[in-house]
Length: 615
Ligand SMILES: C[S@@+](CC[C@H](N)C(=O)[O-])C[C@H]1O[C@@H](n2cnc3c(N)ncnc32)[C@H](O)[C@@H]1O
Image (cartoon, rainbow, N blue to C red; front, side, top):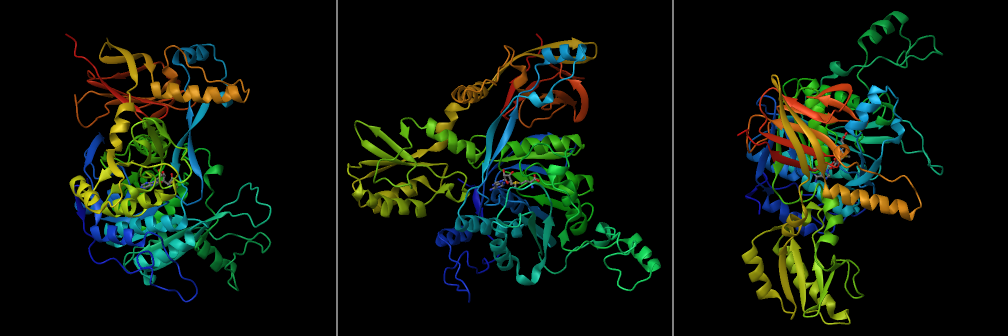
């Protein structure tokens, strides 16, 4: 349950996402689920408990929040934290299913030998498999309703002088423009920026789609716009003997002066290359945006010391650039991979920040996409093939001799609006779905309804009792308990040695059941496709480790990383955020006696073990 609901400051703006009575002269946009969004907005932004996982560096107002955009907004509003600039690059409704490449690292023992022999490594043979990061598959109506809620919550935490940039593309950008007009007001629209790039394409029957749209609005019309900070040189045309596109009849001398000052870039940006062309920045996060893009936005629309926030932070590019430009930052994302990538990226540039996690039950298993994939194998007896007559509302069925076929409802975790089991959903089940079973050939005696969060269990049960006119029993079950079973920690064997003034932890072996299963699945697919490039893991398993940290300060609670190493996909190690050209030697050391050890495997699962005091 949320701790409470934080009311929106005034009645939500009237718009097509709430009202289906608004008709446009040309086209009526109607949204399914209208009442639900309306009800949710009237109820307020659900505010869940947040726990602090880690504190990096000195006390700081910078935040890295693992959780949904909405939850982060509730927290910020509750804490009266205002943001001065928002950049968001939300999932695009592009139909893509983003995957993370998981790279097996070099076995330190082998890596050392290779180094000694000064043999060149063939980096192209780094073994890898994929893991789903987040799904991006929506229908337009659901997407816009979801976006609407997010945008009005974001508006709640924007300072009076704040600006917002929403990065989208042709898939949904023009629909979101209409939402933005309603939420922020047409009068607060500043620009639609076209970010254009080039690159290979296989589009043959149209003009290749090579631009994104960035919608720029201000909260009110007292905006900050530092045009002078972002000036660029005029593009010289060689044909006109060095004259500029703006030349008109100006003399060369005037043009020289003009050019020295540069110009504010137009609202189309063709001078910022996309990630495909800047390999040095690429940290392997699908959809990562270039730093130069964020640099222009942050310089233009914020001043030093202001708070820059990205609620769909991904690789952490906004936070990183904000930090390097002397701004405060808030990075929020729902996926563990984003949080870890951003954390490590920020440690590398020496940023101080606190890491918080929203306790809303949505982050059950790395991220909602992976949790959904996993669920079908975790619910005992569940069959996701539904018999005829049982529609797609149901996730699957469980069959047993006592109850026969029991349809099972599981909320779609990728759609945060299904997170709370409320009377609206239960009403839809008992007064809608249960009656549809009339077309089913067999008899349904019972349905099972899973929830991640429930409005008020007692009240919902009473509601069912009062309103269920069918003979079908409705059983409520907590989804979190299903997942509690399966999250088995990885196991690590290590020894602690004192070497002069240093404490050295040597990892002897590492075992991850989750990764073992993944790799087995991967190898099994290779067998089927007669492909022989299997992934083999050594007896010690050290190639499954991505990151190790020692906490020499606390025995429990908030993690403080007093010493850490990170191994990149080529086996090179970064020590306390400093990149080296050394292979990892299987060790990590600290100046004081470590109390706890944290190991992150290559898929992002973290395991913490205590380091015993010497007797
Ligand atoms: C397009 S990516 C952002 C990429 C980022 N701009 C960068 O340059 O790395 C969208 C991100 O939104 C995150 N996401 C999806 N749904 C979310 C939600 N409801 N709240 C917060 N983050 C979410 C995904 O995990 C993903 O990292």
